[in-house]
Structures are given as structure tokens and as C-alpha cells.
Length: 279
Image 1 (cartoon, rainbow, N blue to C red):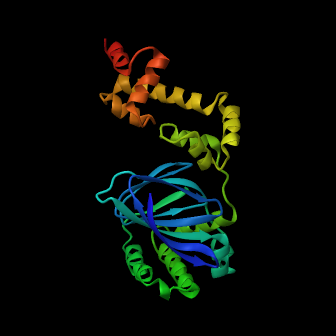
Image 2 (cartoon, rainbow, N blue to C red):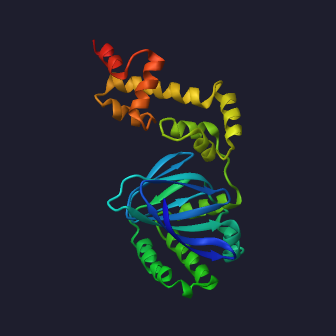
Image 3 (cartoon, rainbow, N blue to C red):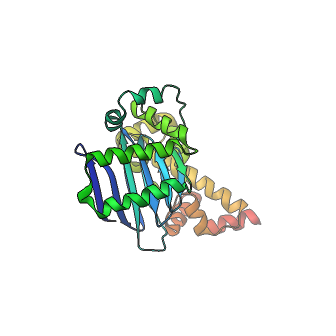
């Protein structure tokens, strides 16, 4: 649940925003034509992308390329957490840098969609200084916003992740095509719905299902259930994990539901299956 949001617009579009979130919460972030720099405050977050899941600790930043993401906040010492987002779209960056962007991306190399910046002190200080403007929004204008975005990018370029900024800028002008098989492989044991998998693939639900059946020869629900049950059998045979632990590890967020499906598919409970393999 979003408790509050402060947004600084640049040419009628959100550029920098601070969001207060009540946990637990899952937020869908859609960046089809923009990159985004997220700075997490107060609680660990998990970011689910087409390539997998990335954990981001408090006071860490993460740079996201064009694409669709889900951000999960599950555990927190406090009931709410703050997140600051910088929206880096191609039109804004083109205006800010004019002819500099093409030169910057000239020799780029494509990389992963998510890059973590762990405990970068200069970024932390930059975020602390930015708080002054959230406390005094009347002082914010487009000139200030331009300076802040340029300052952020300069700081990132001086970090160990300098090449990532170059890759991000390239993606803004040439967004990558996400393959459905990559999304499925990355999240086969995640508790994502078919609609959420479709989002990460950049497809509508109907297009996702049609493409899925073309690749796998069966419906998404049937394929994912079969693979998750197969994995749960493997864990029952080879580990001492509890039934609940195995349920969560294989994408079932309800152990009782997992047990019912398991029995329906194999005509025995998970516990009986484990006992049978041990005898």
C-alpha cells in the first residue's frame, strides 16, 4: 500500500519521486521507454525482472533498464519504508545532453537489466542532500531538476558501475526484446501469476498464453504446475526441508494449497511421498 508520494515533474512528466510504502507490498514498475534508478531506504527489497530476482538492501541503489519489474517488500523492522526513484527517459536525457548521448553509447556493450550499487557512499550523501528539496518543494524548479539528474549520472559514471550507465543510455534508444523462455526460466519457481509473467515478458495475457503454448506445447498453468510439482518431489527426496519450506521454494505461497495439488497429481500427500522414498 502506498501511504504517500512526492513527485517532482520535469516538462509535465515525473522525474524524481519519493514514495512511502506500507509493507508487505508488491509494486509493479513499468519502464517501457525509460531507465530508472531506485534508492531503497529502511528495508530490503526484492526486484523481479525478466532475468530473475535481485535483492537490494537498505541504503543501496539499483539501476533498472527499460522493461517491466515487480518490487517486493516483505520484511521490515518498521511498518513503512521510503523509496526514491529517478526516471531516466530518452527524451529527458536527450534534452539534457543533446549530442553527448550518442557519443557516450558509441562503444557500449549490453549487460544485465538490473545492476546493484552496494554501499556507494557518494550516492548515499547525494540522497541525503536531496531530502532538503523534499522538505522544501517550493524551491524546486526545472533548472534544479536538471542539475540533480546530471549530478546523479556523473556520480554513477565515477562509480564501479560506470559502464552500466552507458548500457542504460543505449537501451533507451534501442530497447531490448525480452524472450518469453528467459522469463519462464527465471521465475519458474516464483509465486508470480500468469498475468505478472506476461507483464515481465512485455506481452498481454492472451499473447503470452499463445506464445507460451507455441514454445512449450501446453498451457502456462499446466506447464508451471508440472515443473513445480516435479521440483517439490526432488526436494522431498533429497532434503530435510519441511513441507511448508518446500511449498514456498517451488512457487506455492500456501502450503495447504500445495499439499492438495500434490495429492491430486500424485494420489498421495507430500509426507507419504517422502516416506515412500525413504523406505
